[in-house]
Length: 317
Ligand SMILES: [Zn+2]
Image (cartoon, rainbow, N blue to C red; front, side, top):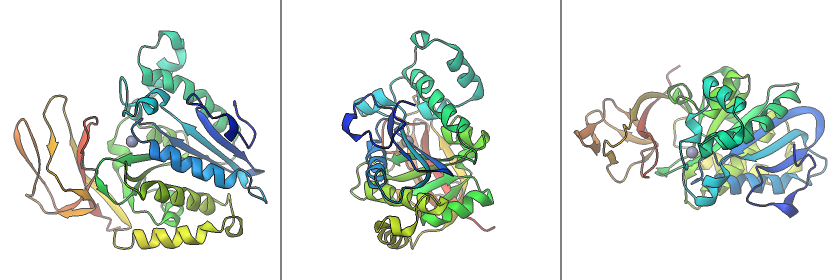
């Protein structure tokens, strides 16, 4: 790793893929925070940087390791979701194998070159960890409305993530093909997506910072006395999400085909209740009507993206 020591804040450049590493007591958990898989989501990077600044010099030192990464550097630089292809739809074993075996100069897609640079860093983290690596993949979204996590309903994950006081959504991790979190879940990581809020909402950075710190507390990297903010963060997150369903499940995903002219009707926000038959969006074929009751999730209000919206339902089990 390029930055194996705890303080690298002096020399951060736009090329730094490893944004910060906090090395604490050996034998503790390894937490990896991946930011910027989508380049139009820089708030996740800022929040992860806050976390690093809070913890880099904390004493007693943290238990285990915290590693903060930026994934798609050129897309972040241009503030676009991606340059050539969606970097969070590429994590198929066949593509990864090909990327690993092709010299970087011969890879045409920016996102695959980014992947080529990211893979050895994650390989190294995995190799050096005796316990499962916890990987938080941080995103933001275009609609207004509450943050949530994308996770499997595995009891181990449910229990861990319930400490964040962020609504948990099950099933999206299976329906979205080729995500980094899906790939690393199959590699034995405890991985989840943290969808931290609207791209530019004032609260998004604070909420992501809070959730990540609560994650570190939940896995045992830090103890309450290390960071006074934990209590505030906990109180804030409980208040912020108190009217939302704790556990939900995906029931419908609207996939956009290239050139189909998808346009979400205005005014939808995450966790807004919808009714079967409700007119949600339009495309070239006409009206798109809700197939079921539920809550709407991630209605698309930006140009780039393959998913028009999701519908989730409160988890009964
Ligand atoms: Zn994203």
